Length: 111
Length: 111
Image (cartoon, rainbow over all chains, first blue to last red; front, side, top):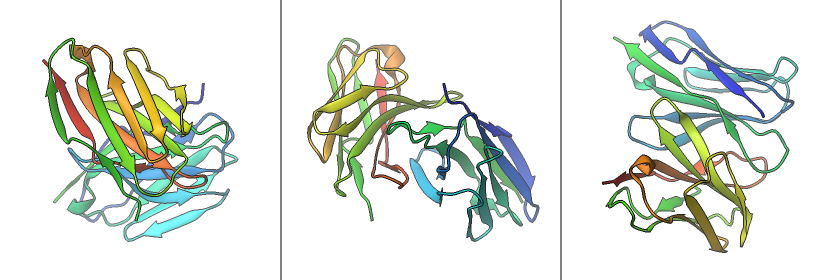
């Protein structure tokens, strides 16, 4: 069974600081997605990574994919309060239509 | 923009009732999914469908069934609702090489 592990599960950081969320997965895949979920809301697509070495950036967030290491990172630069949310990675293993989601990282940015 | 519409944001039902959750997408996507989300357990796949009248069990299908009579509509059915099915239910759809697009979710309470 494919496993997707995110760490940390909980992250509390001060405004203005940088940090990285990690997503490790246990099978070969070159398709990985990042989502954001605000409290009480649904999941919103952030990044689509479709090849080894893919890097995408949007504002203070940057996502990358290393398929050889089976690792994706979501880097936060100079955090602001608006980034407080839960972030999920999801792996598409090419073996059917199912995605496999990580456990989520709950991020709180403190003023 | 992809639009995935779930019929209810909040629903309260009684134990033993048959419950229908409806999901409609407007982008002609082949694949549709039903998840439930519970605190500390992340997203768990209940069922998914890759074509009209086609379905596959996910990780937790017990106590649920699904119906996909038309491409745009995917229904989740709780045959005889129980209190342990109180949860947030999320519907999603996608096409190949694209992320899943989620509806707003249905918060279901079984009393």
